[in-house]
Length: 270
Image 1: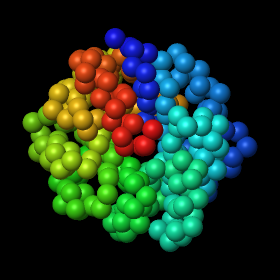
Image 2 (image 1 turned 180 degrees about the vertical axis):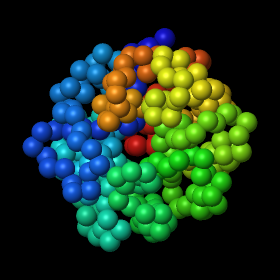
Image 3 (image 1 turned 45 degrees about the horizontal axis):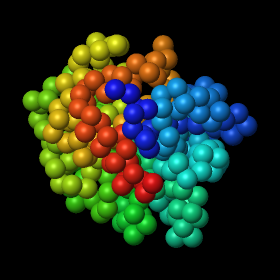
Image 4 (image 1 turned 60 degrees about the vertical axis):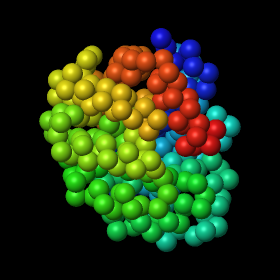
């Protein structure tokens, strides 16, 4: 079973770094050259049609590179952008017309938006059908669960919850994540196991039980993403191996179609 068997398969988290776009002063590392032409080759090799281009932290509030990639990809692409808390309604409308469907909140190194902007921006973009794309240390989930359950609109949590420490499906923080998913307005990306795994590839044996549990019990709340070009990760992971890992964790053709095609189509408006 491969993604090519599912027409409309979507990669829900990629970054584009095109030479000529200046990094923000807040950038924490120099990214690799990763233009859209290189990602198109990945799409073709993996049998993917749709993509969500997520604003990298390195470009700060300047979404120009991300939006240029979405414009070139056309109707099969959407954007997740980063905007300042004081963003105007006119700018949000412009971004929506350019394909934006979410605001990224990166609560780890390099992020620009703080927790105190979360509710306000979520309420601003809910009428547009946008979501909040959130990345933080999943071990802190119990600290934030009530605000996330009350958050206006839709929520997407990155990278299997991004538990930056040993975690099992029985851990309290993982159980809290599952309760947030049960509320029905939250999705989670089965992506980038290398960012938290200590056992490493190819099996990512310490993270696989989390992905399997999410796919088994929350298939309609799961998305898949490559996290291409795997910024600041060495050695660079193999894209085919990562997709195969996720497909093995999902393990069911019906659930795979939900995760690769149906869920992203509904969330991003394809």
